[in-house]
Length: 131
Image (cartoon, rainbow, N blue to C red; front, side, top):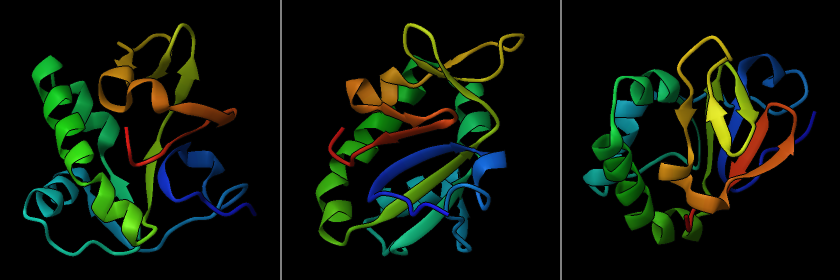
């Protein structure tokens, strides 16, 4: 089983615990963003649930808010070598990485992670904290 990288790891659910390391400590995306916003302590390894659903109900302003919050906390997360795992149902690369299956409305990731999101494997994308 492969270890996760320091940074943001977006991995399809069926690959977590099989091909890639799983993380026991979980938190919702809302609580994760709240902790970042409050400059509160975040576990060194954390699995953040609900990114896909959270982004599916949002718009450009929500993506901008999330990106700004992640960017503002980059140095803090880098300092302690945090590993953040975002389990997702499906992630694909066409002209850009997107969440969701073909029949669903795709969720763009570039507005949040910019061009720093790279494909590591089928169903696994990675972005460093300094997005």
